[in-house]
Length: 135
Image (cartoon, rainbow, N blue to C red; front, side):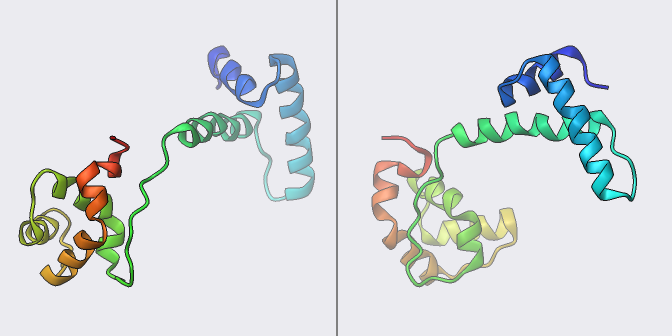
């Protein structure tokens, strides 16, 4: 069951009053029940979906992820752990040490030459600390 605070948060996220939110949830439930026919939805299930709006809005307000230059590199581990690699590189890790760290932490195999090319492509981000939004 949603408590009053959670309903207020949902209403605030949608820009509605509590009464408008309740009326909307009832009408929306009727609409979905009419069209789904498989099983009935409760108001709480619908409101739970709307409570995610707040989380989505908060996530969109966070600073954007850094622009990492991959060039022609197609290594999936680089794409997945690129931000972490750049952060470790700023801490003083070299290509060999980064390869070893990725293998130990994530079981990701990245060759030294690929790591060196990635670091060369992103040397400005490493120098200026752009990967975490620092200036």
